[in-house]
Image (cartoon, rainbow, N blue to C red):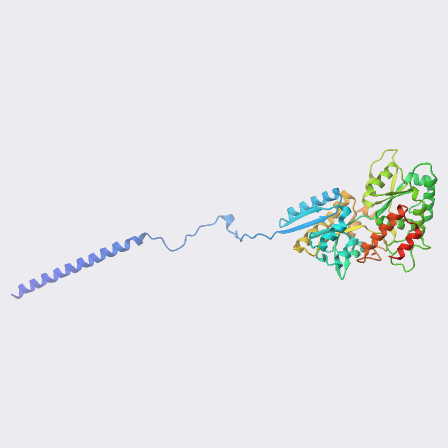
Length: 443
């Protein structure tokens, strides 16, 4: 009996065990089914991509763009000089893609009035090419910014006093010189020797000038004793310096009347008395033509034009022309220089400094010397060029261009305008020396 009960009990236990095993197996199958989609999931670790050998040290930098600066530049230049500046400006923009420069040419005859009017209206170009004689007036009127920052390296120390002094005012420098072009005398050498002898030396004395003028009046040939621009007051001052061997920039500073009992008075009398044989021109081209045709014995020209005329090939019948720059031995001669100035209304001051410094560097000046005969403003260039050294042999002493002018005030433009009016009227025979003297005293 007990054995039968035990067998029944064992069968029940085994049945329960089989049911539990089946249940466990079923649960395992369900877990496998649920977890199987994750078996093919990608690994969370990143894939390492090897770099090529030449890329192993490459550094990727963020792309940035420079801010574009825009400059307007106005210059009053003859066409040939303007074209050269245009070429220099194109080269500048190639090397400075972040600076765009609009170069504009204005009428040289209207330059002062144009710059003055646009400055008064606050509409001037960022950069203007001004005569050195205008700078202090513009600076003192608040139309300009100082340009000291445009003198790179030793550029300021390179400047001659005759050139840079007119640009200094109130402790600052208000323009960067570009070149100079002083007046110089050109002689018909053959006629000079014929009239005054083979042993004549230059420059002539005031007495020799009178002799020359007298011979011109008496000579059968139609030949003037001097060709000179009647519109340019600096031309008159240059001739006065040549004839008197005295600097003329102090005429306004003399306490005594400068036109009474002086060599300058004698020179004015010569112009008045021999006006009939004086060739008063309205442009350099007229003087050049008279020299080439042999109708004048002497002509006053800017150095750039005088040297070009003298160096031209000539035929045997052409006048033998000679340049006389010995008047430059005086302490002061007007350099007839111009400079780049920056308008106070500009929005691109830093770009203006960069442009000016490159347009006035030594290479730019040498190119202007080669192509235009314009004299450079750097002292060192005269030491490295034989032609320049011969032009200014005394450049380290007390002669031109080492001394500053005696007067460089803001009223210089007005003073020259009054002198221009007097000179043109004297050349036209509309005033006498006595009337000149009277008007001068009222200035």
